[in-house]
Amino acid sequence: MSFSVRRLTAPDVRQMDELCDVLIDCVEGGASVSFMLPMTRDKAERFWNKVQAGVLAGERALLVAEDTNARIIGTAQLVMDMPENQPHRADVSKVLVHSSARRQGVADALMRLIDGVAIAENRTVLVLDTVTGSTADRLYRRLGWQESGPIPDYALMPTGELCSTTYFYKRLQPEIATSA
Image (tube, rainbow, N blue to C red; front, side, top):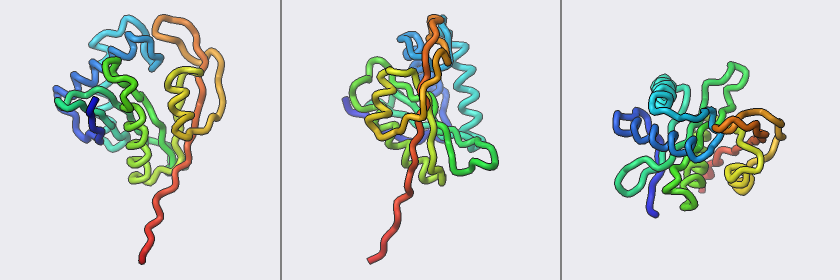
């Protein structure tokens, strides 16, 4: 599968609709990403409208993966709205890949772009959480994220079962420019 990743600064109506599709697909597929079943279009639209407001306010970066038809197949966010004593930090949120595009490197590419966006935004410490032992847990470990620790019974799966969540962090080092 061929795809590209980029930062989306002002999602249009079509893109918002495709973001809803990805979120609904992930939740209906069992992803514990803050939503419970049934996952309605209305819930997805309310969520993405809040995200869009945060993007427009400069509080978060929205990244997307698009297939060759420019259809959104994955997304991730860098939440930069932090307390004043944490201007160097950001949270990674809602790394989502549509079930039709999984195991193609989409999540890897989104996470690598997150690193670049974070550095461009002067963020050197990133934090995220995910379901303990999940596919995402394994992805973050493979990409060099450090485990901070699990919290038992932290959240609910979309169907209502309790699940443990593991927190991870990553320290980024901006590229040091060298002159010849």
